[in-house]
Length: 579
Image (cartoon, rainbow, N blue to C red; front, top):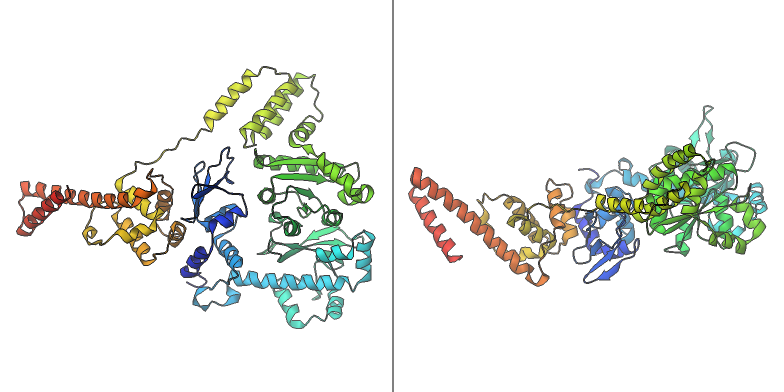
């Protein structure tokens, strides 16, 4: 199939990749026995229930049952699709994806994206070079207090007011111009004139975590509206999935203590210039759920700092409401409320680095900020206002996944509206605990389920099976699946669980295999081989008994042929020897 990634390449990627290192670089793992554990990143985990096996190259959560290999982890944790996860692993190992059938690059999404990365980076370099050739743009930034070194650090650039001037100054050839047009980085207007969407604007390149330029923000240096614009969305740039400045932060801090979220590009740049190097921005737009997930993947504490006007305060309240479902016992948010008509850029210039650090230290906690805003316009002497307060506050509180935080906020709310009886909250706590109690309902662990499960979890057991001829005509349910898995394991003797599941990713039996890969058989490691062989013999014995019952039944009704009599004699002998 054109564009398909060879299975041998995927298998090689999995062989090269250590799932423990990949997960540990994102969420800290602790060694426990031969496995690694941590709190599950996919649900509100009170005790560490997320287990990673180096031996099996497999992860499993005993709380929410999510599981898989390193590709599944990247898909679920990084919100990638399958191809993107393969690209992620390929970049990690410095490999290129060898698509099958010598596909034409222009017809493949992967190659189209690689081309777009290249062109976006090229135009970024041209913008950056042009800034130093354009005194008006350069002086504008200097006037804003931005140093040349920080301009270079953030790769700030400038696009001329006309494309013709831009081409002339930077000697852009027709081939590059055509490629930029074909990829819609530049456009042609109704008058057949080429134009750049960022013409007349300072450009702020937006980088992904590998430092690749994926899009731009643009700020006009004249009184042209809108003041700020962003790149249109492409196959490599989704505005709601990007955080400006995160790449620069991660270059200095692999796991930041906190991330300070501001509104504008220049806010990020000016704070960074003043040694506050934990600063990011959501591209000047309202925060999205995906951006919140990205923030919390990189830190446990997010501090929102919005402009000190009504728009900034309203934006901060909207942000908290969107963030509540992602707050947990481990993940929290705080807020910095700036003085009226101030923003991070202006306040750092007035107060300096030390006073701004003090603002960060004294940031308002989530609970205080929540009630400060929810109580606006409420008259606590009015019964009607108390009722409306409860109606507005409880759904927001209930959106927080942590029971502990929910109860804490409910208690504060109860005291505010005058309920002093703690018994009501004890009752609530019991109800919540009962509601969230996880009852694991598993199917009866049949011999065949256990046998296949052991093989999936320990592919090297396949070496113990001397022959499969005796199962050739077996009628026992599950034997075809067992023989199929056995064949794959024998043909790929180095497979671990993660590689085996990847081999069957798009097959009809993958759902069954995923379930069986997580079963706890309660068997000590030293006895796994013996149990596997015993199960194999017991299933063979069961197969013989079923055939024996059939032949005995037939003998009573119709009688047996000469060959069938020999067969039943042989079965009786085999069953006797197995006792």
